[in-house]
Image (cartoon, rainbow, N blue to C red; front, top):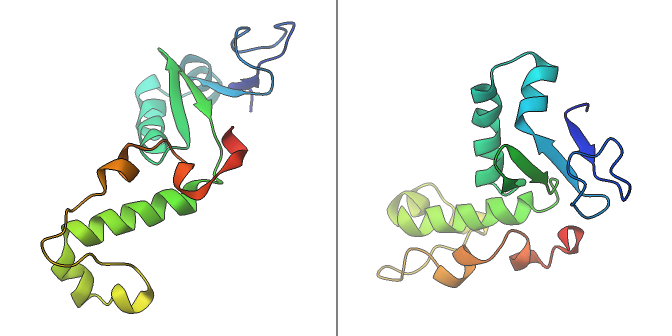
Length: 129
């Protein structure tokens, strides 16, 4: 992709010369220009990718791509959190039979420690380290 460039030690064709070698960066302005779309459309997508921890913001208009390896853990955590918040719906829809843990009534809706952990930590995801 022309809008995402791996930073190199010498800075040639690098999106950010100060980045660590091999880090894939997405620059919003370049992506919008190369794809011929408005910046806000790129942000629409980036906001979703950031919410599911596929990218993180490095600085204004620049994001680091982490890849899709952590998605199963992110989605599992989101499912557990949703089952805790909407416990009755989770039970009615059979999530416990599908192996999704549903906390007992009255338990905290979200594990604060797990929710605060960076993406991939709950699954020992070494692909981002």
